[in-house]
Image 1 (cartoon, rainbow, N blue to C red):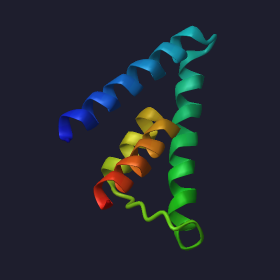
Image 2 (image 1 turned 30 degrees about the vertical axis):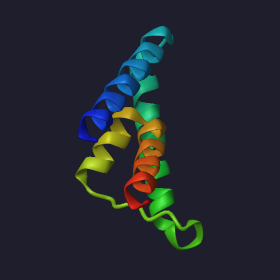
Image 3 (image 1 turned 135 degrees about the vertical axis):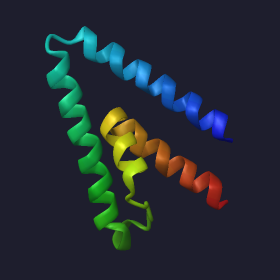
Image 4 (image 1 turned 90 degrees about the vertical axis):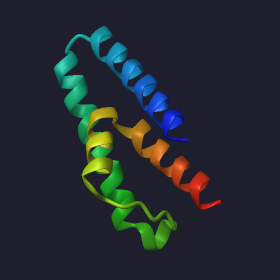
Length: 85
């Protein structure tokens, strides 16, 4: 399970970097993507009573959402459902 998780994270990271370098301003793209990822994680964390999604906020989830953006948050939600089932 861990190997699958890390391989998916590496693939998302490569795709994210490809999109960043195709844009005109890659640093701006990466910073905006990091902001969106952390903002999405925090919004889901603070609305967990309404949405029913219980995500933990720790350095690993914040780092992955800052590095990979919104796809990391989606991957965290999917893995959370897989593990809890």
